[in-house]
Length: 405
Image (tube, rainbow, N blue to C red):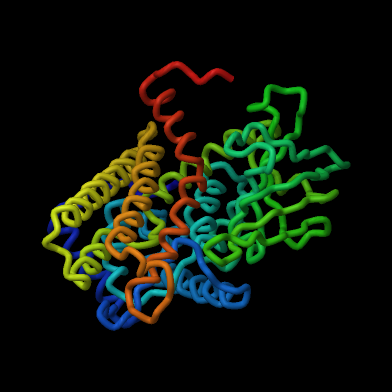
């Protein structure tokens, strides 16, 4: 994305000054978080009804707009887009400070819009698309879901079968997408469709922005085992799109997809904050009076080590981008470390609690962990499964032979 060229890292004095500025602004906007007074929430995916989830999203949208107006919603973006033109290090300082405040949940749909689609359009969109979408997406005035995955393709994005056929000056779309988070709340969808079935599968795809209220677009929520219905199936039947909604060149949808997935892996590994963490495990162990156990201390230490490794990987990824370099497989490594640690934390909590994790008896900090345990497997699939991440690391990072196709 376009940013003002600055050093990729902060010295301690600059970091302290920026942290003080963040805290001064946040003090004027939000109450401080009192962890002792807060009922813990370890949900990875929301367990909410439609109207409840919409209320969460609306609050998150309002907070994102407020952050943008205050200069803290797109810190590393250029001022022309409402940013400060600072660095990834500044973004991490702000994120750390905001955790001390009772900020509204930004929700995954907001993260997709702000952290994935907006920078993709800034990088690959036409001038009209940038003017039309980037600022509204950064402010979350409008939301956008991803229309990538399909029932018959799994993590093989290039194997998609949704068709885009020329129709006069525009396109007619037919097909089905699945696992589209927040599609029922989104005004737009970023779609990848096959436009040339005769071309090699990585070259015959084209990307489009799709208004989700067009005739022929049907969204069907999928009930998850954690209780909510954030994921969706999306059916597209004779959906007519003007060519101005095409993103990138005809047949170059693979580039658009890789660009978005690159932002997604950075976001999944560094921006999404979901479920419990090591600090929560420490608090749980203390409440259960089991901190003297060697096994308990070992599980907590292991979780902390991987949490720290993941944070350093995210920092490396962001600073490579900030310096104008092209990161390699850091995004895949960071995402894999993060998803594995979600499982590690959940397994540790379950072992500490035993049968108390199974039912809501009113005892605090017990059954709440069930939401983490049930939700953690989802992120081992979302954004490219763990197996896909290992293939990317092995083939592109280590130069190992490709799997038989």
